[in-house]
Image (cartoon, rainbow over all chains, first blue to last red; front, side, top):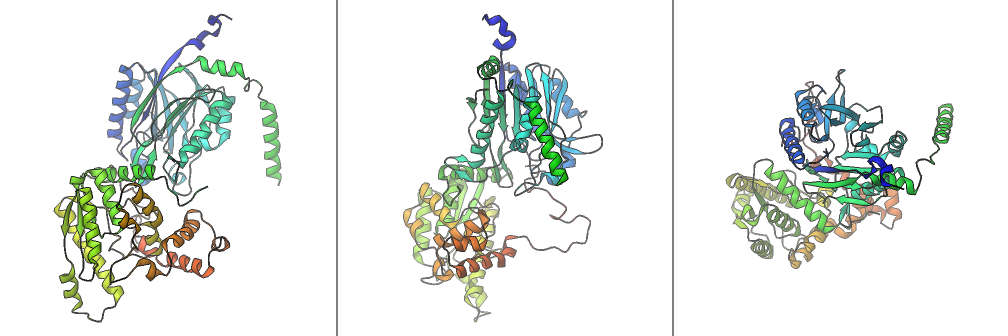
Length: 293
Length: 273
């Protein structure tokens, strides 16, 4: 019953979401903007700062993709890595692999290293989106350890496929980091329509997987398309810890109570009751039947 | 459930942000709007003035001798309410001088010529004031092709091009455009008593519902007819949309090189902005 048995669960850390407006196709200016935010965050004793999807490049890149792509050993990534000795950093970029494949990637930087790379798995290629024309598909969803806890990154459209969040949960995710470039399409009741859907999805993930969700969506205009912002921090019971305004460039800072994860999971043991073997067996059966059909 | 209803506050916020952002990122501070006294151009002027400040917007009035004096009066009233600079250029001498050469020209040719004459004037004034031209075409007229190619459609940025006429009215009312401008019958003002709806043979209220169902909801024509619309009307609307597709696209370019502009040389207009 003593609080010492909870160990690290009494700790907290400071999180900042950078709801920024990158310049389309200008990595140099965007890097400068990142460093400014990171230095300010370091001065404010922030432990983790998260930027949106493609924060170093902007979104509607089209034929600029190879021109703005960065390798993990590039000077730009090094400049960010160096800053990560003071605080952990999540940035979005076009990643170029050694095989010259291009991915929509997010990097988790910590203690001067690239701790994790998530390559966007689901590339929307319908309606106003054209991503699979320009990018390679990511082929893994993994949780990973950081000094703050076990995290997973899912980028924008990845979140619309609940299997990604389920996999990350089974991989022992405690913090779901969700960078996005979600555009306004349809307006209802004071909010962009996509915002309602996102916020519902994210609260559901937070509740069902009993994790913190850190959602960072960009703002600004490209080609007449506006990105709606509305970044959110949601706790493991689904309560909203902090909410950024729509459409405005801003920073959202909050203290994350690490013990919230333990409390939520102690209250309702959803994760320990999970039947992964049943899920796998049934998915295998469905897959087999699908192939035989 | 989606509908033609818009959230005026949010849309207003997005459109003013759009004009401010897309004009300033190209290094401009000012906008020019051709003001006819109708609801579309008045709404564009209101959005421009809010986005950039009244001092940075120029309203241009370009009446022809047959234009209704009421239209000019309405445009002047709106400009006065906004406190923006105005410039009036009577296009009668240019139009009449031209058609002296073609006295038999029909109404359509005259209407198109006037729209294109006005376009050259707003573009010249945009150069004079180092400003960008803010567009005034709405989604209904664009989809129906009820516009003049390189005329009233020409602009640098258009805040209202994704709003149907009935949505333009909703937003205009919400942000304080004078009620007589919102409520009056839309007209291209080409001859006395002309109205859009008289010429088109249907109302904007009716056609917007059909367009919304066909375009935004991607319903089939049969489905729209089943929702209590006259089949001939739906067919006609569909034909107008299809028949005017060329007006909504850049000109066709014969491809000969390995990398042709827009087809496989693909960059955003906001490249590096």
